[in-house]
Length: 157
Length: 107
Picture 1 (tube, each protein chain N blue to C red):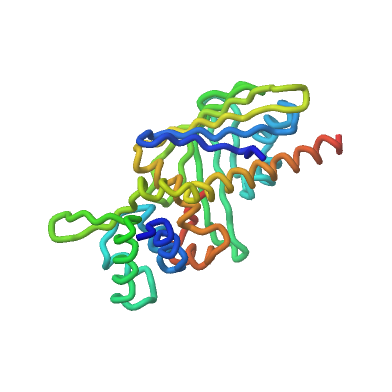
Picture 2: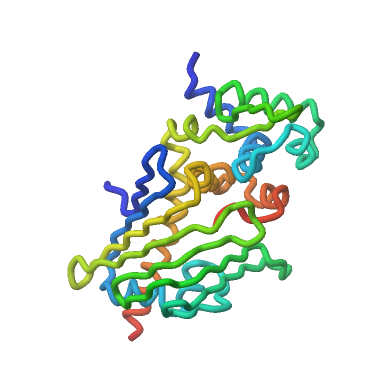
């Protein structure tokens, strides 16, 4: 079966593409990016701020069971075109990773299906490669919490 | 030598995965790497040697210090290394889809 989420990361480039087709009308996919309460559900993080407009900004924060902040990210929104496009920056706080630029394009396929294309640009090739390899290095099921304790912060969003 | 098998043996060990995670975010010296683990320094050195031998890590001399870097090129040769990144997004999008299907039927 063909994979529904595809990653295109060419060697030696400081960018990557994530594409995904959804069994959802375009408007519903876009709503999942627009409504803070829905973003919280699928991203698994608290949305402190989400200003969906040009020059708006956003802020996410995740706390563990003890109330410690384990993930904090923020950015600004450069373009917000309902059902079409979001251009924004993404920055993980308290990590050695630089801010990244994200272009999200939403495309209608049929009345009940649509497609998302995420184009992410990193500061350098090395930085992109590290981001790409982090979920692997972290290990999805293996020693996950132990590793987080070691590094003292989440390694991926 | 079966390099592919060696690579997988190298990453089967949780401490070595921990080392890769540390170095993935920032290059660092053996001393700094060791200070992040409870394991004895010689044991960490052994792990670094294994990771360097199968080319997952690279060494670079800067002044008197040797820094360890992740060899992203080597790691990408094994498709499985990118799979967790893809899986992370796939899981997230599957969740989004499930939530929005429910949202739709509740309307």
